[in-house]
Image 1 (cartoon, rainbow, N blue to C red):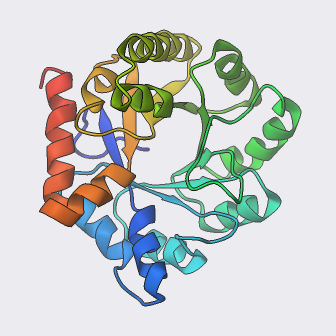
Image 2: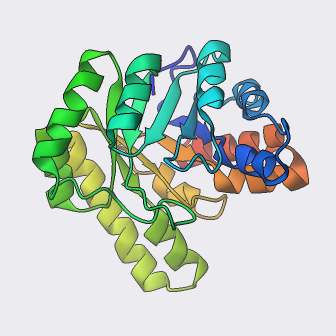
Length: 253
């Protein structure tokens, strides 16, 4: 996402998908993800992320249109690399498009995009998005082959999948967690050396965000599920403010 007027060293993108999940559970008009986006901005978020899935299980097409009209913050549209989603992105032209793998049966995105296997197709898919002014990000595992392929296909950004690191932490598998964190550090450095902007996200909480936020090459974290869950207890604004403090502390701020 774009640098905002705050010019922070590490930006926070707030994913509002699960506000829409709660709304859709009752088939009502509330809670409204656009209202959540405005609250996120007031609480210090630097951008908003929304994942428009093929089955529309949470964010809807109307949500994307309303977010584009209402937001002053940059919108990061997460989506699968399909013709339908490409057409939607080209119509709305959000600031950023993050391509993620998507399977209909998964509860959340369960891994990184296999850029290496789909290199030729992704290069063709990315080109019109980049020409339309969208910054294209690829959601990938901390794997050197995937990161090098991301550069070759023309992505501007890679977002490193932090889910394995977070899962290992919460399972108490600390040696494996530390090894995964070392991989994240090494591949963030590799990506930056290749000229890619480096983001990270998936599963981050107050407990796990510090070591990731401290990786110097990272420029943005995208966090959603934990913040929406924490908002049940403390409110969305305080939840985001707490994450912002944790990120700033990790950067020595």
